[in-house]
Image (cartoon, rainbow, N blue to C red; front, side, top):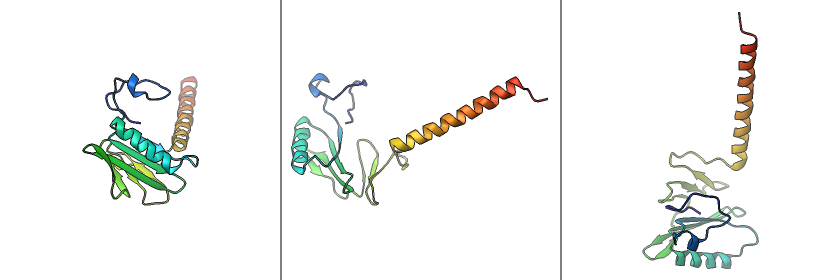
Length: 143
C-alpha cells in the first residue's frame, strides 16, 4: 500500500480507522494460488468503499496484471496495461515480456530483493578490499 499523508512508521498492518481515516492511495496485490478471483472482486469492492485511487493486481504464475483507477466515484479498469504508468507514483508496469517489470520515473528497472542483496554484498566486499588496502598503506608506507 502507498498512503500519501500518512505517518511513516513500522506497523504490522494498515488500519485506516487508526490513521485518521486516510485511505490508501495505491494498493498492490500479488496473487498466490490460494486466492480465488471471487476474493479479488470482494477486495476491489472493499477498497472502492474506502476510496482507494488505484488498485493493482499481479498474478506471477500467469504473468497477469489487472489494474483499476478511480474515475469519478468508481474504480474503472485500466486500458492497455502492457506499459501502464501510474499517475500517482510515476512508475511504469511493463508486462510485454515473460514477467512483470517495474520501471522508475527515469525508466530504470527496479531491482528485485535478490538483486539488491547481491549488489549490497558486492559493495561490502569492495569496501572491505579498499579498507584493507588503506590499512596496508598506512602500516607500510610506500617509499
